[in-house]
Length: 127
Image (cartoon, rainbow, N blue to C red):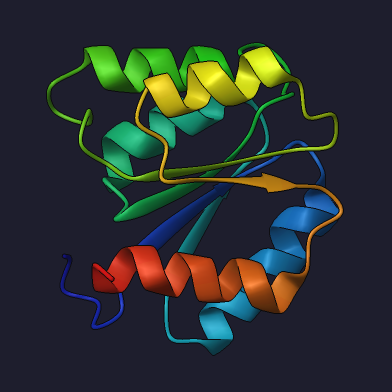
């Protein structure tokens, strides 16, 4: 875990409102939060920030969340960072692929903000 007492979270979603809303709630819970609005920004942020958790939307511009996840898992420097996937249209193949690539959870949009923060806290505390 980083110098931040609670950890660092990267929220990656092409919806600015989701990034802002989730970021605000996570900051209120004591986390350092970074955001990315597309798959390329997400990979860049993961490599530069080294977050303790990535909350990753599947459908994003330039690179999908699944593409980002595959690249993460193939790069030893960032392969072990936990990921929670989120999406508006849950497709069984995405769920299976996500879990096969080691995601810790899968969230459907619209999501309950409080529950998502609790899930993030659970992952970050190692529960």
